[in-house]
Image (tube, rainbow, N blue to C red):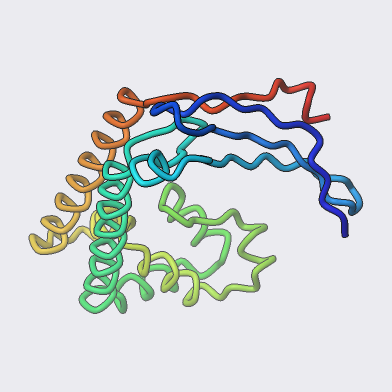
Length: 193
């Protein structure tokens, strides 16, 4: 398998001691998929910056974004566990009372990870397995409790904390996008053909 660089574009890095390099390459396989790779060819800039969405941004801000994303994921997962522990049986029982997979799909429309009837059949999920899959996703906890007519202060508080982490992450992304140091060299759409 050969790897062929079709085109390469470079611009000077922010400190002027190196280059920002974008390469368009193709592997010698069918269907000849083209791939874009980006590199910071400067040791000083590589320590300070990373590439996100074709721009050179502050590495510390990206690390903060990653930390917030991880914290949000972990808290959301804990929220799902707690919801399942406290209300999993009631949730499963509610969906089982509906009696059909299509009815269960319609009852949970709008929840994260909800499937169409076709996808549920394709994955060969029972109503019980489907109910468990949905409740395991902490993003659904608030809506599940609402559908069950339950108010749980602990789970609601965790939901508020998840939303706060999401908001903080969005602020970090907005800051590093606004403060972007440089834009990577770009290829025009016709160059991908």
